[in-house]
Length: 174
Image (cartoon, rainbow, N blue to C red):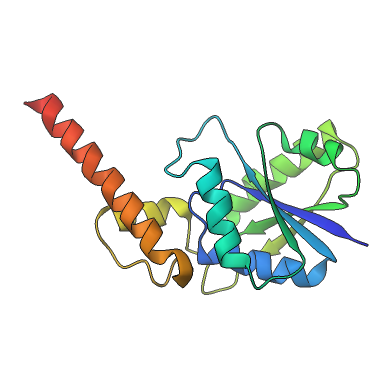
């Protein structure tokens, strides 16, 4: 049985993430989608919210598991000896440079950690969680960027977050 992990922050999960999940799930017997915490990022959605959103959009994919982890990916890989490979999606050359570096770092930290890259589908190459947040915060249409099942939840949360930030900024300026 070949088991892969697809790690990411998924803040929020996008159609690009879902595309990689669906494609990777066909390549491996089991795919574990792991919500990781990057201390260099600030998040709009909590870990439980991101896990819940992933469950909502992957319900039809039968061979996946959703998990979360606070630590190095190489540690997670080490704690789960049944895992064979790390799957990473690539949108552009900039992704490749970063992910290539991370693949080598993971391999250095855990010699068993092999990484497989899956290029994004042409219709999702430009989608990122950051772009989704920006569009949502200004009330833009997210229907092409996030799964339909969670569209309203993401839009409502991000629009409210942006409104609160605007109000706080106005209060500081007054």
